[in-house]
Length: 323
Image (cartoon, rainbow, N blue to C red; front, side, top):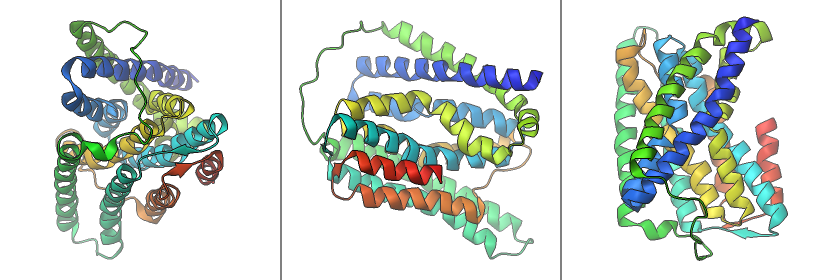
């Protein structure tokens, strides 16, 4: 029972801490400009998931880490985006978004999905005496993903930012809340990161006993619970933007987060595991994991093809998530 209470308290504490990290990052981005700000948002937007996964790696919970990678992609593309389209469609009969930007995001998502599928397929058709080759393949996948992530940032922030302009341009009102001093924003970001790391250690330290007590597998905790906890602030932001008929921002949050997880967080975890984990992490997620990754990507590709949205598209995404 004590482990359950510790796990629940740590999980609840992570949500506002993650919100503070995102808010402080946005404050820093406001001060340093769009290019550096975009890089900061890309880096720290998924920091809660990265910190939790690093602590789990150190504890040797490799299966939970892999499940959380798959779970974040699943949650963002189906639950977060589905809820956003539903709420946005209720308040706005039809919403439009930039098809060119969405098309680029779909292709990058497919690359991310392939990067997870390839090691799993390779694992299905090899014998047990090729472990070194398998780990070399996973390390190579990590390097390719990081390079692709760098080029994706260059494309998005430098060479083709016009691809991501909102479909309906609206004048942005001056923010009602005061801007933080730069020193305060950096201090809050660092303090929130440290406290979140401590809470993550408590969460991971009690995950096995909690899973056993409630009859949940560590894979379920990674796919569902960790993904929802780490992405809670981003989920609220995505839904809020959809309600305000700013669907391009919603897509940037939900789809962009999935891209960052696959192209940046996953390879960083794989390479970090060589130094902090009992054994190296791979991206072998099994046949179920392949389906969980590929289906949301394909469904998003179909729903986002016409550059328009309504509440029923949100229902469709949420239905698949519940299934």
